[in-house]
Length: 135
Image 1 (cartoon, one colour):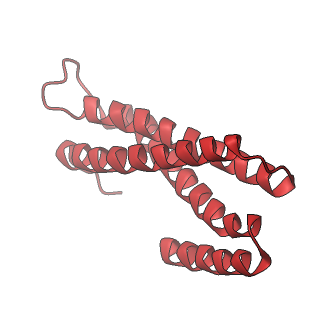
Image 2 (cartoon, rainbow, N blue to C red):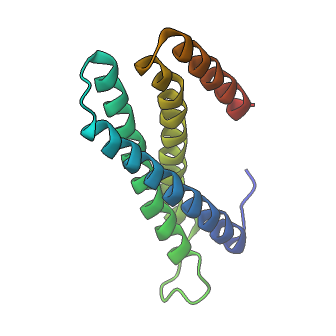
């Protein structure tokens, strides 16, 4: 396995943290909109849980990436081994992927709240987004 330099990990963590912060804010805004909605039903509950998972994943990702940034900064006061970076790298990556997948799931289901036709459109868009994301 290729060992990445601290500078590269630091830059990658910075970019991932920025994206996670933005998408986490989007998820929390969506969560607030669902909470304030007068509608009820099974689909809304599924969207609510998915939004909570997305927001929580991005928050976890932000803190994991912040830890990576601190550990890979040149003036960090303690010695750092590659093994010290494994937990925040893994946790941050998994949280980011779970957050993205949750948002794609939310996008795919969101149209069903309005109509069958809009639900089909958003489902197709969600599937296309998922395919592009996975390739």
